[in-house]
Length: 337
Image 1 (cartoon, one colour):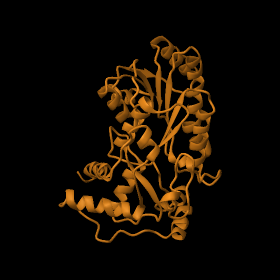
Image 2 (image 1 turned 90 degrees about the vertical axis):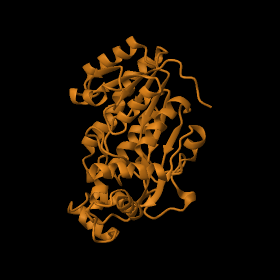
Image 3 (image 1 turned 30 degrees about the vertical axis):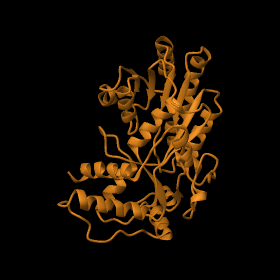
């Protein structure tokens, strides 16, 4: 049952990102008043059309955090959506920690006093299914990752480590938080913000081989809707997985080729069939940073299949293969135009 959200003021951190712009647009369309945290004037240009107010600040600067906290108090904003972070496949733990963990800690620190005053009612925190780890073989349906199942092992992946740590900070903070973990995002570039799967689609259209693993390929629009549903329907203290179509990377590549052929018949198509690189070859290429990094080779040969029935039953989250096909078409339109 949909909860009645009485106060429509929402503070959005990460508003100018790939998901953030879409969330801001949907919030505005649903009648919310968006207070968008931006880092620069460039980000202001991305979200000004959706936001009632833009608040400039850097979460990693103490002085900015103080001014952001005063703003939340003054405006009496009861809802926060936090989407700051970066998909980072480098082995550089410090830089990954800075953008994914330190920003989360800063947001927790500035929100806690607001929560204690009774102003803050709910935070929706955008995590990642990467925090659940991965499995090195194709899982059966009863092995798909869900809210209670995790393949996470520390030290196997920098990206998995930082996402896990950030989510644990939120879970243990005492804030009224709902965590959402999306699958592998697919969607067209929006005002300069893009995703790693857009780069993958470019490679597929150049005829380059893909890796052997699989993922839950997920429409960014569906995930943005899921975040709003978590704001309205999510249970505080719970985590919801926002998945999509669980398929091998090779099957995803073939889907891209098929959509290109049907929707863009005059576009140049690769002459060679879709091929997947064997895991051992990918590891060698990754160690030499040819085509992929070592982290991409590791994760791209693993599987992240998602069971998102909890989000479906409790939030009303919906994702279909047509959602994925539509996002692939939008991405191709930008690539092939």
